[in-house]
Length: 135
Image 1 (cartoon, rainbow, N blue to C red):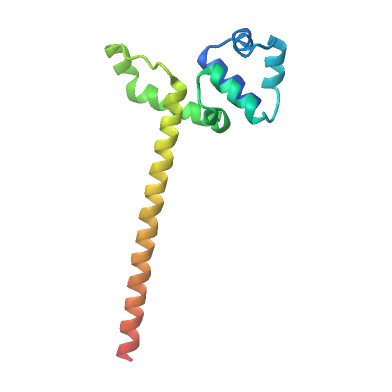
Image 2 (image 1 turned 90 degrees about the vertical axis):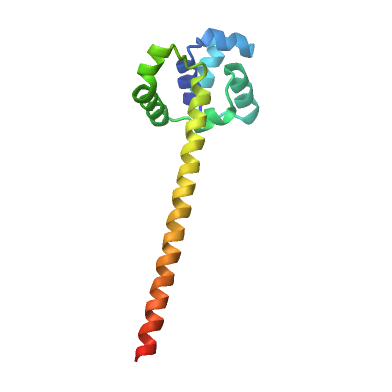
């Protein structure tokens, strides 16, 4: 999770020294924190508050998701951003929002597939019932 803190800090343009100051730690302590595999919940909350992002964003962050969000934003709105001067104020919020939308989409797709399977099973049962009546 320390790696996630480091990547998000870098994406947000926050220097280690600045984060250390916000956390009232030394720069070396922040460096050590970023090298840890796991962070306790209290530390995670403090770091999230210092970076002004939800703790869940740190827990669920992956480079792949960040690249996906960046590429989608670039492909979908980069020209509009330049023309309309539309700044992205908090990319982490956007990452979290897109992640939640993706989860909702997968849930809808799963429900749709389950409904299709139920209909197919019903058709199979009806066909087998028709076949047994004819014999």
